[in-house]
Every structure is written in structure tokens, then in C-alpha cells.
Length: 367
Image: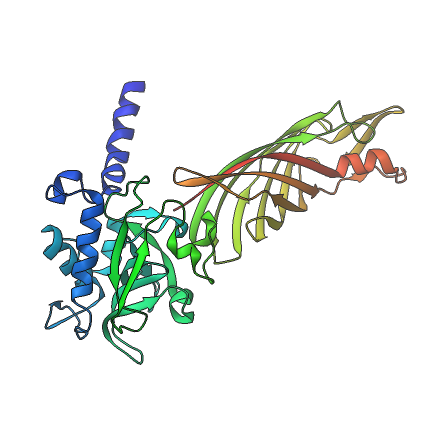
């Protein structure tokens, strides 16, 4: 049975693995990855000034994906997909901060799908074939220009990159297509796009859907009735959407509360930034909440029914790992249970019963 599951998993994942390596080493015509990128860029630059023509792939006119297609075809004898959206699906997702000359940059200029692509040239510039604006055709633009910054949706890698390579890629041209000699140094870790004043260097700078999971230790022992410092466990699975600075997510948060002897299942909506979110939503409690105090058991209403949860979460900056990122986070949540009829409010046990303090680790990745 285990072997069957392994084979089925391999069949499911294999296409994803191979799709993440668009051009294998044997396709580089015997040149190094650095030289291949140089060839692609030089070919793209040779098209500067070519007029825009929808569906075009030659000097008589070309569209944005036609420029990418012709640049790879003429420099490496390799055929890329023919639309911006299919090129986006074909490339390996990379962080904006990791962009190197020869990588591809993608935009949504119309509709909801990727509709424009360019070839990153370093120092925040990219070569593309524009169809609209004060100037059209093959030219240079900058990622920090207001229009391209607003429509930017991510970066992709089609050619290998040697992280130890510090060679210089010679490029020509300036934003807007005026040709002059310039240079873009491909230094590891600089991520030339991140040097642009308007681009963020964090992993989660790029917009898009994301998912992830987390696990946290719930603390006790600060107020009356909580058993030692370990009160329980709070797990978390999430799916959401990240904009440039803000994000929103739907989260399932199963929680075991050892102090009250209950199991909760909150379903919350969270909104905020990468480092701070506010969340709220309904919670179903399994079991009858009861807290042990010095005066005996203190029982609360709210068990076996729906109540709510409100809280906020703070996280340290994300640490990139493979296709996602880790972060340490803490949460403070209020889950209202009410003391039984005839009882009055008692600060220590009632705050303990209603307040959850958790710290844990979370892993998120883009879809």
C-alpha cells in the first residue's frame, strides 16, 4: 500500500518537478549558463526599435512573447511557449529579489491573467515589446516606473543561474529605448530588481495566492488555573492572497486547550501585513469548559456550541526556504466563555479562561 502511494505521488509530482527546469543543460548548445544568458540578452537588444506587431516574431514586428521567443530561438536554437501566460507557467518561480539578467518578468496589464512579459537586463531594467503608451515596440523600461510597478506580478527563471558567478552582462539602452552603452553587474544576492527604489527585497514582495501551515505552543501558568507553562497546542492552515504590502487569508485553527479541557475549531479571516495581522471568526467548542482553581472547579458556558474568536498575530521577518518561507510568530486571542449564572467576575480565572497566548512557527509558500 505504501509503495502504491509513493508511485502515485511520484506520478503526480513529476510533471511539477520537470516543469520547474524549463531548459536542461543539454539545451544550452554547449555554452555555460552565463554565456547563454548573455546570448539571450544580446539577441533581445539587437531587436531594439522593432515595431510592435501582434503575433510577430521577427524584425518586421513582434509582440512581447514574440520577443522572448525570437531571443531564445536565435541565440540558443530553443523554442519557448508563444504567449505570456504560457511562458509564465513554463518558467520556474523566483523571488523578485533574486532576479538576475536573463530572467523573465511578468505583468497583468489587461484581464486577470499574465498578459505581458519582458527580459530582465539588470539594475531594475527590462527589455520588452510594448503595444501601448507614448512609445511602442521593443525598448527598455524600468520595474520602478509607476505603470510597471502597479501591473508587475512576478518573476520566472528559464535558464540556470550559477550563484557564484559575478561576471558582468554587457547591456545597452536606457529606459524608453534610447541606446547608449551601460552595464548591469550580476552579483549574487543583490537581486538587481530589489535595488530599485520602489521594489521590496522581502520574499513576500510579490503578489499572488499563497497557502501554508503553522504550529504553536499555547502558554499557561501566568494566571490562576492554568496547568504549568504548557496549556495546549494551536495549529493553523491557511490560504489567502498577498498584495504588494497587505494580505488576507482564510484560516482553520484547531486548538487543544488543556486548561479548560476542550477542543476548539476556529475558522477565521485574517487581514494585515507580512508581520502583523488581525483575525476574527466563529469557533465551535467540543466539550464543556471548566477551569481548576484553588476554590474548586469553575465552570463556563459555551461548550458544544458556536462562539467567536478575535485576536492579532505578530511575526518576525520571513526566512526564505526552498519555495516558501518560515517565520516565528506569536498570537494573542480572546475567546469569550461566560461564568455560570449566579457567579461574579473573578479576574484571574476568567482572564485565564478567555485569553490565549501562543508562540510558534509558520511556513508559507506561493501557489
